[in-house]
Image (tube, rainbow, N blue to C red):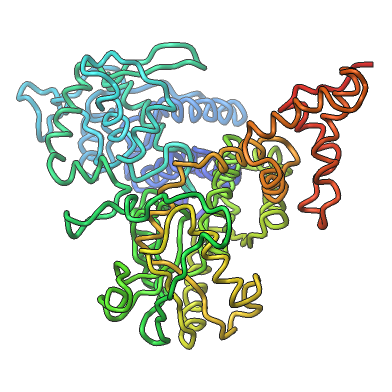
Length: 605
């Protein structure tokens, strides 16, 4: 520290700024970048400053930092019996010298420390000595850009006075932005939503309402900027911004992916399943490739994960995935092989592995808003047996970590024990990238000498996909997956186009799916228990009717107390004796279901 101070024109100020910088790094606060810039600017400046307010002419120094320096200077002077320096105007020669080194701040160039306007002109001045103010335009696909696109969408109304809430703005803005509006990137202390502060300061957006009910809309200047931005990105690029989740179509005559696999009739028995002759891809006719979701980014760097995977020898295919953050496909060396063998479309077959990546802060958010359970529900219906949850243990401050530690541990344990998914914990995104690269290499070795069976898309419907897949697997392995990675038994898969079509139908749920989701809302009802309940009572109406019939049975002349007891024990009596702790319904869970579905509350003492 002494060596650094000796070679600086302002060693005392530099020492204090370095001290604050070190404290900010230790505490992992937002001041790290600010103090770093101030330290580097002061260290490189050859001018000696007599008063902290003169530092406003340097980059990285604002009123707050100068005020802290003034407090430290006063303490230093009192402790050493020195006079406190008085505020002085920085000489014009010093200002010019600072400007020549490129270390001057915008505030210092436009306004002298005593409050008078500087006569320094710059490129873009209006000729009378004052700097012309350039209009603020948000950077393409950054936070402010997405917010303006959202507020100027058709949903916001043509008059610009349709006030939107934060949640709705984020929903509309996220497709236009490369960074998240809700999750902080690794090493950052802000999200894309923080750009709203800049838009408010620049009078592009208006705000109204209290803290819990804020609404936003565009000003006239905001609408001008929005129209200019839309004009710049008009045409094909604007269509990409509006629909970033849709893969490009090579042929406009081909049907959309979501329409490729029809819904089909409900399958009630194995006899209703079609007899299919799978297409066999021999070993060596395809290569294993990683497919990465286009929305997987790091700190706003759009291609960081892709570039790092290329360096590790696992170049990915990047596209919008309707489910998961990464999966693997078998890509045929002959693009027409599937079409010639059985009429299947494309040249990619989805393998039996899929990855869902979660940062700790995103895990907490998904637990709180219910997305975590919804994602596991969709993964269960996708038909892939090897589901991997990658939990990145980063991006969380110690207080939040302590507050939600129990909830995160419970969610991870439930994912492993109840759902049977593999959970891999990593400490950074780089470790996650390394894990994906190793998985890619492992799968390449596994399928190098193993054939792959492909179910023709013409035989698939949304209703028969899972039963048909299970029937084929049962015929090969007795209902169990291969015990080891090197097992010679073939695996069954479907084309990527068919998989994308089936997973895109997740929002179009059947009555059975809705009933299962309703049952899962009751604490203690796991996926296995919900399936057993749905097998016994097919629909919500049948479930409610079963409770209502108990009011007039039992030979007690409709005694309401006895009827309530029968309702609370109904599910337990029917399913409490099943084999296996995951399937049988405990008495406590049965009572909770009766309270929710039959209003059979426990009698108060």
